[in-house]
Amino acid sequence: MNPKDGGQTSDTMRIAILSRGPNLYSTRRLREACEARGHEAKVLNTLSFAIEVEGGSPSLYYKSKKLRPYDAVIPRIGASVTFFGTATVRQFEQMGVFCLNPSHAISVSRDKLRALQVLSRHRVGIPKTLFVRNTAEILPGIERLGGAPVVVKLLEGTQGIGVILADSTKIAEAIIETLSGPAKMSVLLQQFVKESRGRDVRAFVVGNRVVAAMRRVAAGDEFRSNIHRGGNAETVELDEEYTRVAVHAAQIIGLRVAGVDMLEGKDGPIIMEVNSSPGLEGIEGATGIDVAGEIVKLIEDEVLFPEVDLRQRLTLQSGYGAIEVPITEQSELCNQTIEGSKLRERDIVVLTIQRGSVTIPNPRSDRQILSGDTLLCFGKNITMKSLPPPRRRRPGTKKKTKDGAKKQAG
Image 1 (cartoon, helix red, strand yellow):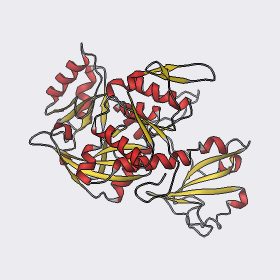
Image 2: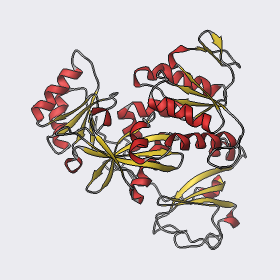
Image 3: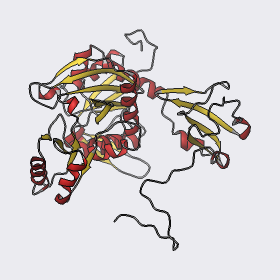
Image 4: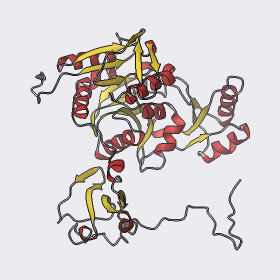
């Protein structure tokens, strides 16, 4: 197959696009991009599958017929069918078919609270968020967020649906009590970023890079900037920090393709959502970039060079493993070269150096190790135990008392 863009030849693949809307812009563009690069693409209705679970032989039926083999799957799972849709993607995974976005990552991205919890452990900006079930916690929670106005969000809303700006504490309390009362809807309270009112940035991540980005501006007095709600979009050139945060967020959630929505806060990017099925119409229209084509190129690369579970493979040898080592000013390795660190003599190999948004693979022996770097090392477990900095005691924890007990809240 000769790609029309003059790129490297690759084998023809059979690609399934899971979508309930074959005529939707995104679905149509993905099919066209697959065919333009010489692949066979089929749009399959997510709800028309039957999942057959059998020991040693997982299989799928489509419209009562056993599904033919596919090389890759592009999941376009709607929010209303997340449970069945992710189960179908998971079955493809069990059958050994490459899935552009993994089932577990789709599930995480769909649960706003879970996604924020996962992101909160990493060096990315997120809005201060509160999740409560006891109404007595609402008022003190709003105070901890800095007071009204606050944003009230349904846990599983899309396209701006279920997102409400509460201008006062009483309004916020009334909204939450209404939604979480008889309706039994789970809601989040979020800090309102005033400087970004009515505008945000969407970065479209494909693999390990941002292939396109746009700024969305709300219409009139609307504070939600979604294009589906009448917002306008314009192309934007992201700086290094916004690009780093977008790619990092997608990788944290586990998505190969993602739409990362960020607010432009006074201290830098603030992640609002990591979307596992981002629409193509707005981003392609605003930027003129063939985003669908970039997605298909990624599939070609991933199917040709399948992902390897590095930690699992490296730990097959007893006594050896992989470890990430953050470098601080106090580290024995700080300001040393790879050769000068004597790591190789201790049977430890530095595979990569993560420096800010840059990954340095297979670093040379004269490469200097700097404070702030993170080393990915492979070697003897017993030797590598001495490399990471000592763990700091978590704020608020108490030293053990004489009888060994600890005092903790709750």
